Length: 382
Figure 1 (cartoon, helix red, strand yellow):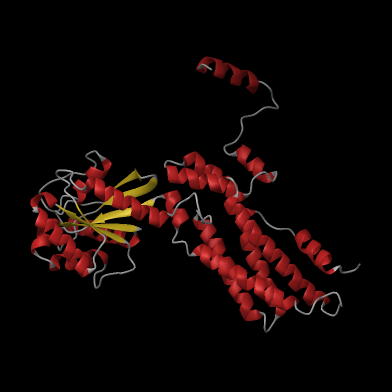
Figure 2: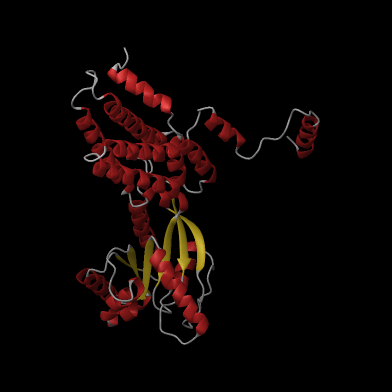
């Protein structure tokens, strides 16, 4: 197994003109071409190779084992049978072998599939988040302890920490594994009015990151918040939206500098957060490390809620191409409902388009399968 032995063997094999090195991904490509894997399983294998967290590994294993592919194949089979029945009705409607309730069966099957697709797409991007990482942004006023929190989570001096407000000018990004869930954590510039051109650009980038984030960690100075209760709501409004509190944005409130507060003040501050409805909230001290463990536990629960459990439930779409094809399939099914009362030929074309979108996920369904169902189910020409 030494380098010299391996090199000698490869050199000897390379002397044969009919031998060559395998191209990148060639074995997986051949497995797909020979029907051993569908596209989703091949993607699952790639995700398993690049998995860095336990959650990613579990999701990739489920996809590689074919759970996602089997789901899409079942939908493809349903569409193939439904389309075949509709085509048979269009072409052989005068034949006595065509039941009168074929159109009702087609309509019910399409409605059931449309419902399943809608529920599958309404998973909150759990699969994609688990595969690519949850984008978490630390945001808040200047000098609240954002960079200190980043360093605490990374357990190393990733960002420069200084008592001077406005130290962070650009976005500092790092990848973390929190409780088995992949996280892309970004530290941003303090949100405040400034005349410094460079800091203004930093604030602009910070606001853009907040808009694109999956989860926003709003960090505030706990001592200031305890003394000025309006600081809580005003700062949160400033972070989440220039005009009003965005209730659709997922956020977690972090109150830093608890080492400067008495225990009764800490309890009072948490009660204020509950009364104002600005939770979930967590008290901690980036200076002493107090409250970090409790914060990490709460953050892990939030990540688990956002990513779901990869071991249970229905498999989720894991890539943007899955989402795009499924959305186009759903649009075609909805168009079918519009055409079925006016033009069955156009309605059938919508089912064909929907089937083609599903075929892009696992591999195209051939015309032969369509014809086989038509002649088998209705015994046409027998």
